[in-house]
Each structure stands twice: as structure tokens, then as C-alpha cells.
Length: 111
Image (tube, rainbow, N blue to C red):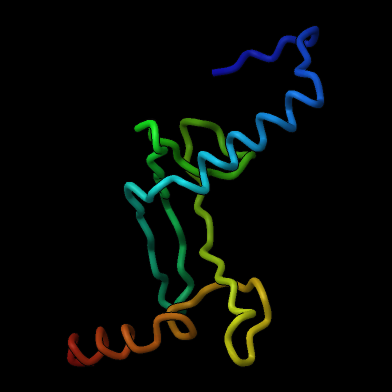
């Protein structure tokens, strides 16, 4: 864990360069594992998302405010601007984004 040193500052240009390096890493990563929960109103909650970088390192995405020992839940958002009636980014739900799969699951459960 990084112990902040008030005297240590990364130069702005180096920060920008590192942002590019990390963005490249994340854009080429593959999902290694994911854990989700669907509540009874159809909200999709991402409990964990683990990515494997091209060099083999594993990273997990979590909210900035969460401590490394505590995984705070995140919601799944979807970009639907390319679809008829789309609105850009919005919260994903099983009713809107997994309607066929939900119908199959309900039918399969005999409900």
C-alpha cells in the first residue's frame, strides 16, 4: 500500500504519460472473473470485476472511496446511444438489457 509522502510529487507530464500507459493496459485486458447479483427489482449489482492484463497481472476495479480490504458494490451501466431510442449511458437492468434471458429463466423456473 502506498504511504503518501507529502514531499513526493510526480511531475504533471509524467502523470499524463502514466495515464496513457494504464489506459492502454486496461483497454487490452480481458475479464478474468466477475461476480454479480440481481436484486428482486432487476437491478444489476457488480460485486467484483477482475481483469487480467496482457503481462499476466490481475487487477480489480473498485470505487476510489473503498479501502483495499473492502469491495464496495458497483452498478452495471450500459451505453445504448447506437440503438433506436437510445439515450447514451444509463443503468442496466435485467428487464431492459436481458429481457429474453429473463423470460427464459422465469419460464424455466415454472413461474
